[in-house]
Amino acid sequence: MPCRAMAHLEQVAVIVPFNEYEQAIATAYNIDINLTRLHPEAEDLQNLFKRYLACIEAIAQTKSVAWTGTGNKPNQNDVTTIFIKKTQWYNWRTGFQKILSNYPDMRAWLEETDNKKIEKDALEVWGVQKARYSLADLTEWVEHGGAFLEDEKEKKEKEKEKTRKKKKASGLSR
Image (cartoon, rainbow, N blue to C red; front, side, top):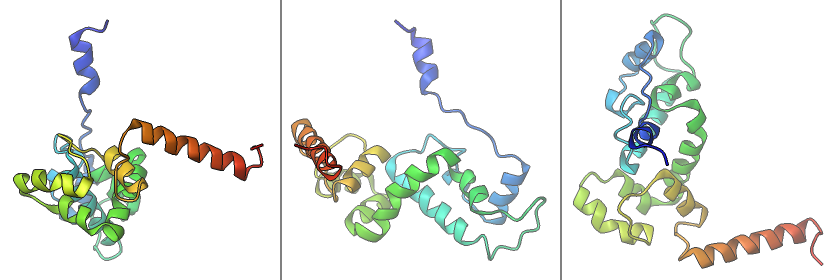
């Protein structure tokens, strides 16, 4: 059985400080440091969404910002790494991108700043009540057309149906 000290180490996020180039990007783009990867403690879904929006805004500025810093003018990847690790960008982007265009109620909930209203509206928006919602929850919610599956039994039935459709499409069914 692992000791408590080891369990704690597994949960600690490693914060990699900005290098000189990244600091110059954050300054040139007027990026709020509280929305960057330097503040992983603010990783509730509302803050992640704010960070995503700030990242998208900064990416949009890459062509218009006059770059006077050292090194090459920043590209999308350079800007993205101010906010999140490159390896996490795809999941982050796909989770939030669909919200912007397809789910106005979820977007309003993610942009809400009043904790009491967030808690009150959660059941209406999500369809289930949870103490905390994650990016994985959001991804699942989007994958199911803006709703959670009712329970594990329904989830298993959906997976079986998906498998049957794949087999049928590939000609493997009887």
